[in-house]
Structure formats: structure tokens, C-alpha cells
Image 1 (tube, helix red, strand yellow):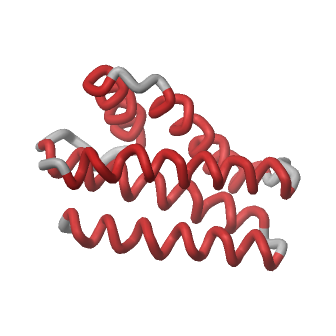
Image 2: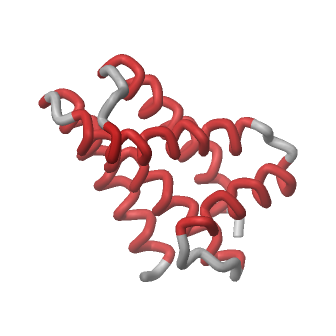
Image 3: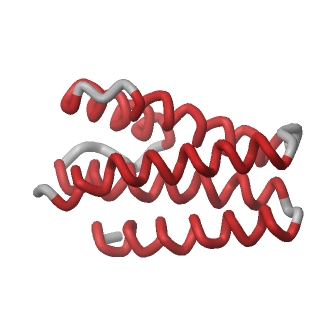
Length: 119
């Protein structure tokens, strides 16, 4: 995929996450929230020439970006996205926690967007 395709997927997944949450499909809301974060991390990693083809590369990217920017919230917000991914399989988070984690994903996207736009 191209960087632009990752960005478009991110937007689509985030909108779907909010709709799924409103509809009460907590597992799908969680996975779409994770997907939005993962797509944005892939876009930034691709633009920098970093590996991004495996799940573990997302954590590496988040850690590298935290080091690059000095913004510790990048990694913290990434962990909220990871919790959503785990919830897809476990389906144990209540709706209010999913909503908070989706807000964290939105914040993560906001922090990553300038990094992508800057290059």
C-alpha cells in the first residue's frame, strides 16, 4: 500500500470504530480503532523507510517516534490502541473504556499526522 492508502484506511477505520461503538458492537469498534492506529503507524514508518510489515513493527515504530520526538505520550497512546486490539479477542472492556481508548487513538493520530506531513 502507499502512504496515502494507509492514511485513507486510517480515516475509514476510525469512522467505522465510532459507528460500531454506537451500534454496540464492542469487539468490532475495538478492532477498527486498533486498525486506525496501525494504519497511521504504517504510513509514518513507510515514509521513513522503516519496517512495518509485522505486528511487532508497530511497537518498534511507536518507540522510535517517541525517541525521535521526545513525546512519551506516543507510546502511551499506542498502548491504548493495543488494548483495543486485545479486546477484539477477549471482548471484556466496557463501552466507556472503549470510548476512552478510541479518544486515545484519535489523540495518537493527531500526534502522528504532523510527523507524516512534515516529510
